Amino acid sequence: MYVLFTLLAGLAILPFLVYIRFPYFLHDLRYILSGIRLSTRIGIYSSRKPCYTILDRFLDRVKRHPHKKFIIFENDVYTYQDADRQSNKVARSLSQHAELQEGDVVALFLGNEPAYVWLWLALAKLGCVPALINYNIRTKSLLHCFSCCNAKVLIAAAELKDAVLEVLPALKEQNVSVFILSKDCDTGDMESLADKIEKASDEPLSPAPKTNLTIKSPAMYIYTSGTTGLPKAAIINHQRAWLASCMQTLAGVRADDIIYVYLPLYHTAGFLMGLTGAIDQGITVVLRRKFSASQFWNDCRKHNVTVIQYIGEIMRYLCNTPKKDTDRTHKVRLAIGNGIRGDTWSEFLQRFGNIHICECYGATEGNTGFVNYVGKVGATGRVLPLLKKAVPFALIKYDTERGEPVRDSKGFCVEVPTGEAGLLVAKITKTAPFTGYANNSQQTEKKRLRDVFEKGDQYFNSGDLLKMDEEGFIYFQDRIGDTFRWKGENVATTEVTDVLVMLDFIEEANVYGVKVPGHEGRIGMASIKLTEGMEFNCSATHEHVKAYLPSYARPRFIRMQSSLDVTGTYKQMKVKLAEEGFDPSVTDEAMYFLEENEGYIPMTKDIYNAITEGSRRL
Ligand SMILES: *[C@@H]1O[C@H](CO)[C@@H](O)[C@H](O)[C@H]1NC(C)=O
Ligand SMILES: *[C@@H]1O[C@H](CO)[C@@H](O)[C@H](O)[C@H]1NC(C)=O
Ligand SMILES: *[C@@H]1O[C@H](CO)[C@@H](O)[C@H](O)[C@H]1NC(C)=O
Ligand SMILES: *[C@@H]1O[C@H](CO)[C@@H](O)[C@H](O)[C@H]1NC(C)=O
Ligand SMILES: *[C@@H]1O[C@H](CO)[C@@H](O)[C@H](O)[C@H]1NC(C)=O
Image (cartoon, rainbow, N blue to C red):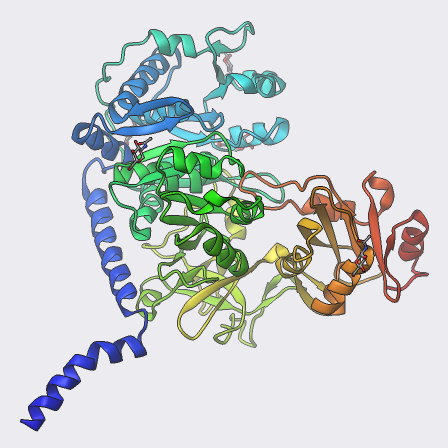
């Protein structure tokens, strides 16, 4: 009897023991199961001939729930059926007025609006491949993006006509057809498209032959946001498109959710994780032209949004808005994205309520990714030893000064110990391929790291420093370009930024390293945007950085800017600022210099000369 009793008691506390030992057991199990279901699903899609694409998924959704709301934009609502019909009209007018063949590349140059979705669907129906061009780029960069994927046709928004006119002669030389999404067009070398769409029938076209379509065929080109140099066109094949779209499933999006998409559709986050992910789930998308901190929650309330996306600084922008009584009045239950820092994460939850934040890590062209499905504050992902076997990756020692991985005496890379930051590299295999950049073998090669752990192996170089803790959580540390070295010490720009924005008069800070003649490495500099109505307090800043930062990490120069430039994905632009450096004559903006014993003093041409001539030591 006693034996039986202890046995029963033992069984009863077993789950409890498992919980103590493996607190994330259930989360892990759920994640693994959903991962297995997903790879089975994508396996089935690949084995079909022709393969099953997101367009096929969309058409199935139209059949299943034609009258469900698909896109809500400003005051317009479009059902799944409306979208199908609209895209038929677009496909018909394009096939009639542009000589398109299966596999041709068509560049889309427009902002977030429903037409973006119709155009993409229409191109997919015609078997063509869209190149999603960032609408902020101009001239040389625009031409580069256009030609590196060998596009035949350019379709641009009416409001971007001037940008197109700048490059029109060059496009015409390459016999490119240019369409403008307006009802008429007075420029001879371009054609209007909106009028042609309006007149076209909404009947489906006879399906494109798709004879050669496989899961490895390109589905689209997405440009990686270049904080340096010209953008590169990542080739997104159907498999990658599926993988990114399935992020919503992994994050726990359900069929009754409503997602808010305000990130640009020309990037992976907006297009694949937002739009096509929503099609996979068959849910409603509230589409917005641009992020607006003041309208964000109003939009969520008005449309009963349940899922939001975030990236980079957005969460901090939201936390920086004035507090309101209605901060917690909304239905948002899930936020999916990347790049939220630990302190903002806690502040966000405290302020806006119980929202599950699903932070994930991945690159548009990368061959690996992590998901923090547990919601552990600060971590960008979780890795189970099991999964590490399936998709081999490593965090390796990196020499920031020389800008390359550390190699041992045999010439191989060295993994960092648990808890230390290392460069993330992921083995390139059949199941984790690296498709590279279109027409840019040089940049493609640069991302490949060879002979990492044995002769002849190949790894994708993420360019990111991450660290892993003992529980298997992965933390983003820095982008390689975001670290500089001064006086033999590494300075992580994000860390310095975090310290600066603790001051109430500094709303935003962008920290970077600048070269000083006669010195190794780079010295710290910060561009800051002041909080409205407040002034820069030299002595408070000095005391603060002295209290929080080692001397080598303190910004020696501070530059005031009325706004800080960011890329389309809200990453800070550093390269141009770093090149302009601390020469006060390059700008009208005020600059300060940190004099070791005095604190921040206004920067002058004399100080600049003394530093560059070496008469003033740093
Ligand atoms: C590659 O790009 C260059 C210019 O960027 C262009 O002239 C060339 O036609 C492109 N080649 C292909 C195959 O797309
Ligand atoms: C453009 O088209 C013209 C006439 O159709 C042809 O002569 C020319 O070779 C083409 N140019 C290019 C770069 O394809
Ligand atoms: C399909 O592939 C075959 C053989 O690789 C090729 O001859 C044919 O031109 C391709 N068709 C299309 C439409 O690309
Ligand atoms: C949002 O939800 C409420 C209650 O669930 C409902 O009354 C309202 O009509 C919904 N709003 C929209 C725009 O669907
Ligand atoms: C600047 O900060 C110091 C505290 O560090 C404070 O005593 C001083 O009043 C501030 N100056 C202005 C102009 O706000």
